[in-house]
Image (cartoon, rainbow, N blue to C red; front, top):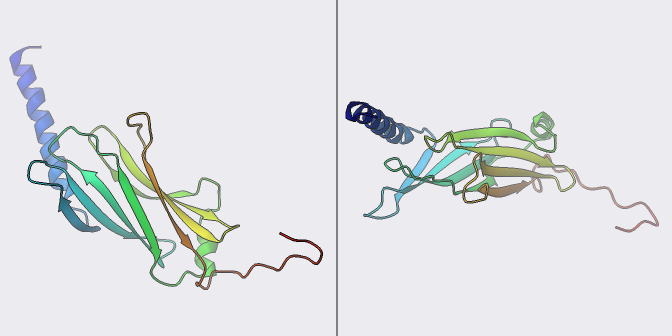
Length: 169
């Protein structure tokens, strides 16, 4: 590779990194951006989103972002809470398959890594499960985090039937 080709490729890579850094700060859902210190370009980004099918649930996602390095920021945490009513109609509208449905996606690096959040319904425990995970393996692990929202106290909660006479749990 000659020096001209090297300079062109380096220039393109740096331009892509700068553009990624600028675009990463353009999120409508960003709640906070916390610096990890003076000597690092890494920040903790806090995003909030409301579940479209269950607007009574709000999730907050924390993730490390590093727009000016080639680091692979995979760690994330999720916390979801009931912030409004959850109705039986909302529960009827969610995907009831064992792997649920992807409800949020965010690009995490220039290496095609994506963070996804799935909503999974647990009918036995009347609980919504929100699973945040990375689509690429990092250090032998797929990074993931989980949060649950029980339906207890919402209008979607169904009181369990008492056990049949003579049968104990």
